[in-house]
Each structure stands twice: as C-alpha cells, then as structure tokens.
Amino acid sequence: MTRRCLAILLQCLHVIALTSAASDGSKWSYTGLEGKYDWPKKHPYCGGVSQSPIDIRNELLQYDPTLRPVEVRGYSNCTEPLTLINNGHSVKMSLPSTMYISSLPHRYSAAQLHLHWGSTDHLGGSEHTINGKQYPAEMHVVHFNSDKYSNLSTAVDKADGLAVLGVFIDVGAFNPVFDHILSHLGSVRYRDQVVQIPAFNIFNLLPERLDEFYRYDGSLTTPPCYPSVLWTVFRNPVRISQEQLLSLQTVLYSTYVNEPISLKMNQNYRHPQEINERHVVVSFRDGVILAITLAAVLGAVLIVALIVFMLIKKRSKKNNQENNKGVIYKPAASKEEDASKV
Ligand SMILES: *[C@@H]1O[C@H](CO)[C@@H](O)[C@H](O)[C@H]1NC(C)=O
Ligand SMILES: *[C@@H]1O[C@H](CO)[C@@H](O)[C@H](O)[C@H]1NC(C)=O
Image 1 (cartoon, rainbow, N blue to C red):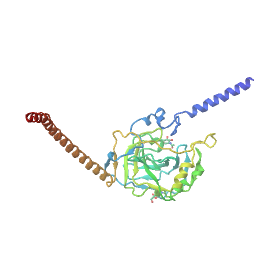
Image 2 (image 1 turned 30 degrees about the vertical axis):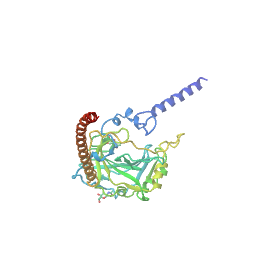
Image 3 (image 1 turned 180 degrees about the vertical axis):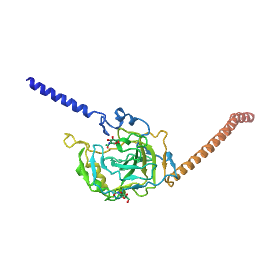
C-alpha cells in the first residue's frame, strides 16, 4: 500500500517537473497562453524598442542614393548538404558561413533561412507589410556579423550582430527552386524532425533586382526579440504556386510526433510593430518618389482649396451680414411704404 502511494507521489512529482519544464522562458507560440501578445511577459525585449516586423508605409521612406545593391558571395556554389528542421515555430534550413553578404560595412555570414506563412482560411502570411498589404508568405535569410563575432549565438543580442534579408513570397507559377525545400516538408512534419537535403543554388531563391530594397533597424521577429537586426526587405516578391503554398500551410505541425493533440503549424507571423522614431531608407526612386510627390501635390491642392474655401466663406459671411442689415430694414421700409400707401 505504502509502496503504491509512493509510486503515485513520484508520478505526481514527475508531472509537476514536466509542467514546469514546459513553462520555462524558452517556450512561446503565436497563439494561446504564450501567444505573441504575451511575449513581453517572459521576453522583455519583445515589448521594447526597434521591434520588427513593421508596416513599410510611403511616409516613412527616405530615398538614399548611396545605398549599394545587395551583393552576396557563395550563394550559387554551395555544395554541402543542407539540414532542414522543424523547430516548432517554422521550417528552418541551415546555411554554411561560406555564404555571406559582401555589400555591407561588415561581412555578414549566413547561418540559416526560414519561412513565415498564413493558413488556408486567412489571407496574408508575411511579417512585413507594404502600405498595409500582406503577402502570402515571407522568407528570412539570417546572417551574423562575422567580422566581429564568431557565431550566430554570440552575435544575436549585439546591436550590430545580425543582417537579415527578407523576401516576400507571392502566388504565381510553380517555383522549382523553392521546391528544393518544399518537397521535403513531409520529412519534417513534426517538431524537432530533421532531414538532410541536397545542396542547390540558393542564389536563385532571391528575387530579381537585388538593387531594389527597403532597409531599417529592427529586431528578431520571434522571442527573445533582440533589437539586433539590420533589415533588408526586397521590393520584388518571388513566386511559388498555389499548390506549393498549400503544402507550406498544411503539411507541418508545431507539436512533437507523440503528442496527443497535434497542432498545425500556420499563421506563424508577428504583426507589425511600432515604428517610433525610425525611418526606412529605400534604394529606389520610382514609385516612392512618385507617391511622395503625388501626396505633396495633393496636400498642396488641398491646402489651397481650404484657403479659397475659407476666403469665400468669410466673404459670403460678410455679404450675409450686409444683406441681413438690409433684410432688417427692408420690411420696415416696405411697411412704411405700405403705410404711406394706405
Ligand atoms: C564559391 O566560389 C568562390 C569564388 O569562386 C570561392 O571563393 C568559394 O570558396 C566557393 N565556395 C564553395 C563552398 O565552394
Ligand atoms: C560561439 O562562440 C562562442 C565564443 O567564441 C563559443 O563559446 C560558443 O561555444 C560558440 N557557440 C556555438 C553554438 O558554436
């Protein structure tokens, strides 16, 4: 009897231990009790400044003619197998540090890339938005400042630690390059599952026109939300087919293979954050300048119209007052006239 009690007690302790392990600071999700609006409780940086993503609005943009086009090295001749992992929040592919960005003041070496997406019953899925427009998905290629730091873990919380390339993913024709990743999703359906995939030309995952991008100072878009990221978000999206998007939205689970309840991995994006004092510099002029000019012209027209309107109103008020004077006296005058007629 006593032995049985002891067994039950041990089992209880085991459950308690498991529960507390599950609720440690590292656990987070997009919805539910540890959902994105509650991240700041355990991850104070998530409630802090310079957070990402942001809604990239025309009025934030500053054209900077000195911005160099994005240049990368080692993206096209990566020969070692790549590791694909379901980390419970996204599907992540390891990248060798022989790949790097060469157009920034420091060398930023690649560490991993991962995706954010929506679900079949909701529009949207990208983290960054353009004037409120959300794309179906977004890819982040994460690099760390390898001039100053030896690896991603040491760089991740440093102000000049990371540089991330953001690529919008839209729906279009079948994309054979993205299929090098997407065709393997079935091998990493559950959390912590890993698969080795053959090397491919990673450069081809990037959009056309690496000279057209938005750049700003921001953060990791997941806990612990360190404000350590120099963001480069390309203007032009890449395209994958509806079927490819569907596989991203439906194949993966955020739960472990043996959990009693499986949770689909989708809607794994954070909402746009406060911009505060920040600006977004842009490398391209057309569209932006047009929009700004158009806004300025419209603004000027509106101000002129307002002034004209106020002047007219003032004048008509004055006229009315004069007329009113007439109106007051006229009936009297006409009465007098009438009286004189009688
Ligand atoms: C890719 O090519 C560059 C330049 O030719 C070379 O320096 C680099 O070592 C190559 N990388 C790999 C992984 O072979
Ligand atoms: C990263 O670099 C630091 C300092 O050089 C080292 O202590 C740490 O073990 C490295 N971490 C990884 C994951 O390689």
